[in-house]
Length: 168
Ligand SMILES: Cc1cc2nc3c(=O)[nH]c(=O)nc-3n(C[C@H](O)[C@H](O)[C@H](O)COP(=O)(O)O)c2cc1C
View 1 (cartoon, rainbow, N blue to C red):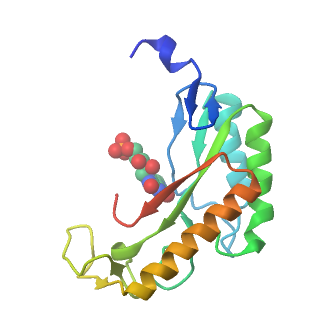
View 2 (cartoon, rainbow, N blue to C red; view 1 turned 45 degrees about the vertical axis):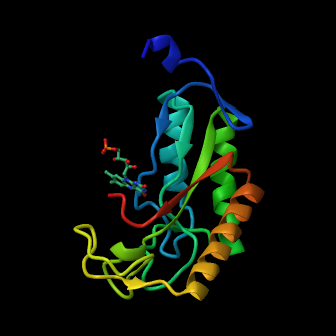
């Protein structure tokens, strides 16, 4: 790709990102004990847009529901998590960059507790054979993703990425 493309703006849906340099979701383990956004996480992501020219940041794995089968990185399953994320989003926006939230759950990869997945199928990425989700659980999870997305929108995130389970 010509370098000019890398540093030229790109439209994603209704937003325009100032360049094509994207920082992927990285679980930085910089949240508070209660899984809220910590000032250190704000400093970390802000430094990428302030000093390193990143145009779009995708926030770390952010749990849409809490439970033994979700890896707790950050959480967005309650309103109490909104203020921390708002500080993060406002800071990133100050520097003319965009930020998406990664709305996530761990599913079949859950290292402890109950592992759930669309099907009870073995995978090298899973510690064991997960339980198949029931129809009610699927409906519940859809609602949780919607609730998380609505909170992200209210906070001011420019977009969202849905992550389910086993990509790494
Ligand atoms: C320490 C660390 C934490 C990560 N956290 C996440 C995460 O929270 N969500 C996610 O989807 N991917 C996560 N990843 C994967 C990265 O976002 C990214 O996809 C990957 O590192 C880049 O691709 P590559 O390593 O195949 O080049 C993480 C990777 C590392 C090394």
